[in-house]
Each structure stands twice: as structure tokens, then as C-alpha cells.
Image 1 (cartoon, helix red, strand yellow):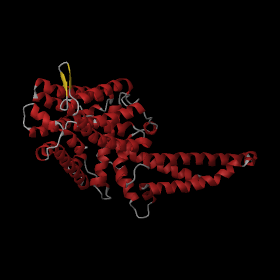
Image 2 (cartoon, helix red, strand yellow; image 1 turned 45 degrees about the horizontal axis):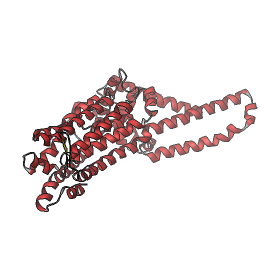
Image 3 (cartoon, helix red, strand yellow; image 1 turned 135 degrees about the horizontal axis):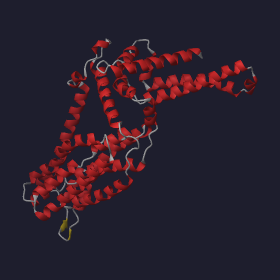
Image 4 (cartoon, rainbow, N blue to C red; image 1 turned 180 degrees about the horizontal axis):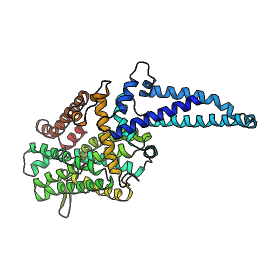
Length: 424
């Protein structure tokens, strides 16, 4: 019992000393470097904490010890023993309770960090939080309406992005331009999305609902302009509509909502769902275009046919989603209180500095911890390769999507229905 108390006191003291050091001397972060250098020792038991299996093995050993004490708790005669023995049993019980609580805390803190890379990168941000904030993070509650509206926004945006592909060639010709101009019509959306992502990323420090509503308004306006372009014979309206659709892209907001508000136990599901609904939206858009090509009617001055149908179809869907967001979407409680934005910025700064220490300064000497400015100039090779591979993948995908309507209509005489099914 004394040994357990001694170890608990020393571990807690060491952790608080390192935490205090890193708060006072920001240019020489020590916690991540110190712990990782000791953990890399050949005989260090900290290596077990780098693997889910190691943590679970420790938990299993502790559970066996705890289970051995369970029969002692159930012996009623112990309650009738002398006061000294009863006090000892109470101390043992209290120690076991604290041990179980510490065990649960360790699991909650590190079971989602499967490697020393993640531990090094995340050490700064974890130590920056108070105990109350850590407990609040673990007790996050999922709001189903908000979470699924977030996924719906992702699905509809990807649908909106690809729905114009099959008919873009016909639309460009109808508006008096060359068929090859269809690539510009499609490409205006991702170009505009690049301009808006930084603004939305900053805005999500303060709110999720308001940027989502702004995106919704931009998407409604963009689709309306795209649908009216044929009536006014104005190519610029179609291009402006696609630009507004790009500016209304909320993918960055959707990602951050999952990362910042979804509880740990549900995060894997919603991260996978985010990718899945995006892929389904990419396929659903061309399929919708194929079916919308079959309609042709007019309501007042509004023409709805295969070329303008995608715009009006998405216009209707975004109006419905916008109304639901207004009444059902909720910002996470307590996240945007005064002072929270400052705390988030400190966490991001600390996390970036700790990441640079772990990734760029792999030696055991504490003096090797460089400044954040030096770290930002260097990008790890694996990350560079991953970003380059993603860029090439998107480049080839967009090239195929943009050229499919033009090539299939010119060389194979395909109609919109066949092109839509091909792109889906």
C-alpha cells in the first residue's frame, strides 16, 4: 500500500514539474522530449504505453490483483475485527478505488494514441488542459441532429459539385461558348473553395452554426444563378453561380465539427461516415443529372430542363436543409464561452511546438529542441509524399470528370444519361 502511494505521488509530482516547466519556458519544451527519451530505453516499461496491447496487458494485470481482493471485501467477519485492522482494509479499499480511477484515466487519455509519434505530437495539448477541461472533453455528448446535419451538408455539397458534369458540355454550347469551356464551369467551384477554407477555419473557433448557415445561403444563391443563366443567356451567371457554390463549400467546417465535438467513442464512426457520404455524393450527383435530363417544363420565366435542372434541384434541397439547420443545429455548449478561443489558440501553438520537437529533433539531448519557426520550414518526408499523392489523385479524378462529357459526346455520340452513369 505504501509503495503504491509512493509511486502515485512521484508520478504526479514529475508530471506537474514538467508541465510547469513547459508553461514557463515556451522555447524549450521538455515534457515530450524527456518522457520519450526515457521510454526509448531498452528496459523501460513506458514502451508498453505506446501500444493498445501494452496498455490492455497492464490493465489485465491490475484487474487480476484487484480481483484477488474482492473475496476479502465480501467477508462480513472483517467488519467485526479490531479498529486497526478495519482501518487497514479501508485504506486498501481506497487505494484500489484510486488505482481503478487512475487506470480508467490512463485508458481514456492514451488508448487512442497507438504510437510514440502521436504521443509526442499530442503531449503539449494534453498538458495544456486543466483537469476540469479534460473531464469535460471525456464527457462530451453527441447531438444527433447536429451530427447528422453535418454529414448531410457534406453529402449535398459533393452531390452539388458533380451534378453538373454530365450536362456541362451542352450548357456551355447553349450559352454561346465552346464545348471545351465546360471544364471551366466545373473548375470554378474548387478554385473558389480554396479561397473560403481559411475564413471558415478561423470562424469555427467561435461558432459552427453561423458559418454553416452562410454556406447554405451561398449555395442557394449559386444554384439559383446557375439555373437562371439559360433564361438570360448569360454565361457569366453560370460561372458566378459555380463560384458561389465553391465559396459555400463547408467541408472544412464538417471535418472540424467531427474532430472538436464528437465524443471519442463515436469519432471513428463519424469520421468513416464523413468519407462514405462524400463518396456517395460524388456518385449520386451524376446519377441525378442523368434522370433530370428527362424533364423539360417551364414555370413562369423559369425553364427547367436537363441543363438547368441540376441547379434548381440542388436549390430546393439546400432550402430545405437550411431551414432544418436554423431550427435543429446546435453549437456545442460551453465551447465558445469567453476565453475559450484564447485557450484553443494556446493548445494549437503548444501542439505544433511539441510536434516539431518529436518529428524534427530525434536526439536525446534536451538542448536540441529548436524553435517553432525552424520547424515550420521543414515538412516531414512522409507527409510530403502523402500530400503529393493526394494531389495527383485529385488531379487525375478531376481531369477525368471534366473531360468525360466532351470526349464521350464527340467520339462515341453518348447522351447525358450514359455519361452520368459512367461518371457515377
